[in-house]
Length: 454
Image 1 (cartoon, rainbow, N blue to C red):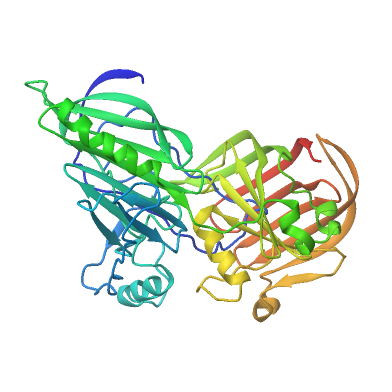
Image 2 (image 1 turned 180 degrees about the vertical axis):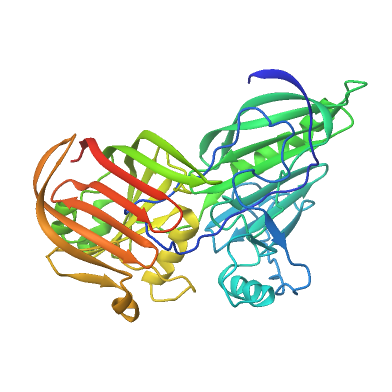
């Protein structure tokens, strides 16, 4: 644990915030966004909500849909005498003491910039509540401590604000990090310990951690003394140790049997665990009337490949994301000869629901359909006359810093606001992409500089 004293005036402590996804006007190259990491030191002052996302406007006049009745399992298999909370939409569960209280929160606000033209606030709120559950934000209160779970702000979190830690008051602050066991993994959590400015007495402590499955965990509490709080903290940590993912996956070859996707798909578009691609990215981005230029190097690496029924799912972690990318976790799902992509855990859950035959109010078009052939198209057939479909424009050789690739295809997606192109090469994957926006300047170009595929 590292402690750093700093004296700050900040705002007020509550319980968490979440995130949702919307279909982009111009799709980014098969890859998509990264979640903003929590600062290692609190800002001055610590904002009531993250500074990156747009301000969410609460609409209290709209009646929320009824909350589901919580029916906890009477006994936990992990801790005798404890109950179990299950969240079906996000696929997790945890055990908790009978004297703890759980509250849930669904869609409560609409971020600015997400207001469809011609739709009233009541209509938009009703639409969102049809898509998302009433337990986006889940808060457990135990004594003077709390745990709050939510998806990232870039996913559904922005629709359930405020949730979890949203600020503090005017106190002396000790910034700290602590290793926390959540489920069967350990995470480095960023936190703050608050003390009264005049007396130096302990006021409260809280931490924030981001989980591998895309969820965010806030926890903390207060007490008459720090030692008094530590007794509550011990129970909070014990609760987090019972956290489990409830998503069903098949991971061994013997279990997979004949459910493997065609080898031709993986031969064309490698997605084995350990595969990686490194790109140099140039981005011109207009903001406030000024064009900002960015140059960076980012790496995409497959960290997990699992199976569910006949679907192969590969999880990719992106480091050093651009400001256009709102998640650092990308999922590719292979369904026979078709490859889909989803950004973050929220989109992934909805994509899997769609592929199993149930529409979720958010439709995913394929990212690729193999084998690639000049003239082939895929996407929304109702939008074909206006573009809004992927088309294979040409077969051509491509030269990028990573080398010369002879067998490649150039794909294009055209919308009324701009276009995106990708170059996909056999046995390698995406070796380059470019995106152009017709209005506000958004120009991005990327080229492969190194790769390692199996």
